[in-house]
Length: 136
Image (cartoon, rainbow, N blue to C red; front, top):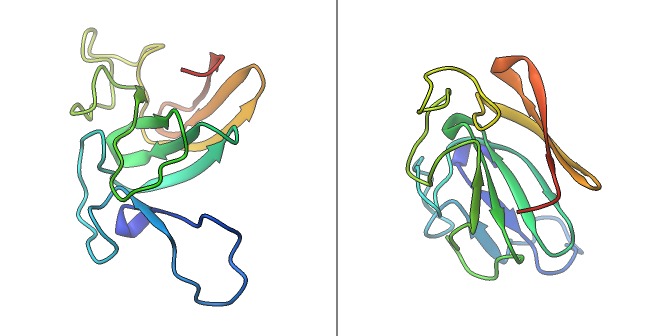
């Protein structure tokens, strides 16, 4: 739910139209939509994938990918790892150590998939695809 800065999770596959989600990520509740740069905040998420245990979300305008070690079961659950940034509170489109794109930076990541043993991320504004071997 990109423009509401959140990802909605259903514990079971929805069986009817309009079935409410069970968990919201990126927001403290279902009725808020503020962008945030933290372990539990999102700013225009655009892609989601899972290993069945870990959850990966591209946080496009924070220039990062957030990783949860297990599927979250409560609202605003903080991520366990961040890819593309030095920490959870930085949102730079370049490597903060060098001021340029690097193997550690992302600039508006869009697509995301798992192609074992790689995590594959399209780094849209840097016109490249980055691969991480294994999962964090």
